[in-house]
Length: 264
Image (cartoon, helix red, strand yellow):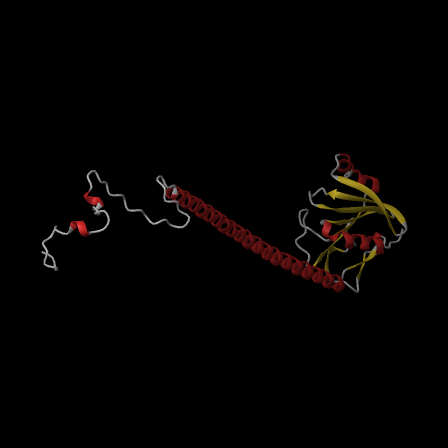
C-alpha cells in the first residue's frame, strides 16, 4: 500500500506519460566506455605517437650532451697542450736570456781585461841587441820578460826570447811570444828551409817594411809544428830571424816589426 492507502499497482492508469524503463535493464545493453579527458595538444585518438616523440627528444638531448662533452674535453686538452707549450717556450726564452746575459757579461769582462792588458803594455820597453850584430833595436810590451842566454860576444849567433810574465824553458816546442835570432848564415840559405813549407801550402809568404826595406814574412805552420809568423831579413853579413810561436801575438809582432831599426 502506498501513502494514500491504496495498494501498489492499482492506480497505474492515473500516471501520465509512458512508463520509463532503466537502460541497463534492457536486453543486450553494453555500457559505454568512460571517455578519457582530452589534454591540450594531445588528441585523444588511438595510436597516440607521444612516446615516440619523447624517445626522439631524449636521443637528441643525449647526442647534444655527448657532443658538448666532446667539445669541452677537446678544449681542455688544447688548453693543457697550449699551456705546456707556453710554459716550455717561456722557460726556453728565460734560459736563452740568461745565457745571452752571461755571454754578454763574459764578452764585456773579456773586452775590459783585454783593454786593461793592452794599456798595461805601455809605455813600451826598448830592446837593444849587440853592436857586433848590427845593433838591432825595437820596442816591445813592458809586461813581457826578456831572456838572453848569451850576449853574442863569444858566440857566432845571438838569441833572445820574450814572453808575457815569464820566459819558459827554451826549446823548439815551447811557445814564445817572440824569438830573436841573428845568425852567421846567408839570408838565402836561411830562407831555403821554408821553401818546402810554401810549396806544400803549410805557409804563405808576404812582404812588409822593416827599417825602410822590404822583407819576407812567412805565416803558417812553423818547423816546430806550431802556428806562427817568421820574418827574415839581412843585417850586414848576417841574417835576422824574428819569430812568434802563436797567432795571438800577431798584432804585437807586427808592431815590433814596425819599430825595428838596425845598422845596415
